[in-house]
Image (cartoon, rainbow, N blue to C red; front, side):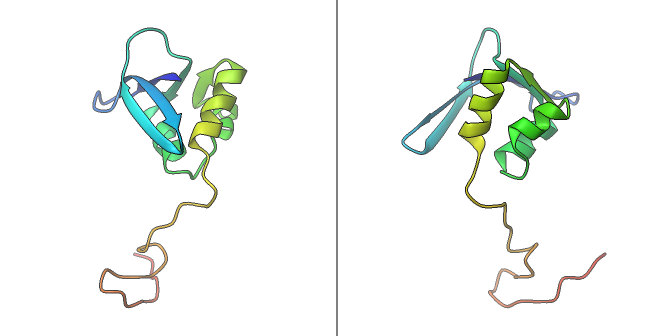
Length: 102
């Protein structure tokens, strides 16, 4: 799968070749046309597993042929929702605290 990530700040943009084999993914710089193009924010949301690529495409944040979008969605889909110990109230020393809004 070849994808182009756009970044208005010029930091994370580029064209990449994503391969997945045996449950392991590898992403390397690539040349040539992309099968899917997405904004760096959409790429981050998909990579972290919080938003399916299909949802991003429906919102206009990912573009490509329908079969390529479906394939990328399958490559990045995770079994569980994203989780962070900070968002769950845990702190690095293993104790817990009540989450508060700042």
